[in-house]
Length: 293
Image 1 (tube, one colour):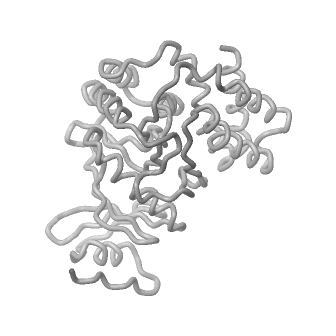
Image 2 (cartoon, helix red, strand yellow):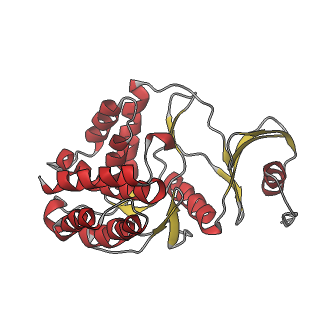
């Protein structure tokens, strides 16, 4: 196999795409600060994403491969990566619809059922120190979901949110009370599910092929209700149809709707760490809702 050339100084996304795919580039279109659409010779179009931390690039690539390996949901294929660049398929855009949403629900249920070695288990070849969006996220395997969720998905972000002023100490104690009661609040025990891990509406693309596609995972082993709670958090077109499709394949445990706020604590605290006080207030409201059940 011919080795790929080394990146040059100040390499841009077009040069990175050519190097990592081995194909000439005919067009480059900047989409955002980190994301570029690149057309390759022969009309193939890819998305080129720059990552500031090599662990983030490695985690995203490993997550895309692990989720795609399940053969359930649609994900863009990975065409190449290095410590700073990730090259994936472009998803031609379409429109959301009820049929695609119900199909997504069924596919998510099948994805979750593929499982993971443990709660917190990273994807194969994925780093223990990963990311969710721009926030660090540790993937530490555990057999006990309530303990793991408190120690690795709630309390680390509570501490950071207090430090940056997004949470007050008295408010943090409300969230700590949820952690203390997690064994009773968590509902029936569930096996580790294969999670997308950052399943908000912005990471859900409605493709021209009539299917929903998932991008930008923070994949790990977790509780299946967490992915669904995140879809609720920021809204999702045809969410009722997504849930109906899910329930057709893998009915959720009794009381799952009452646990949505519990599972939303993690993404709300991540947002509090990244974006400040408004999300800290929402996290406290979610904590109080979880305690009231």
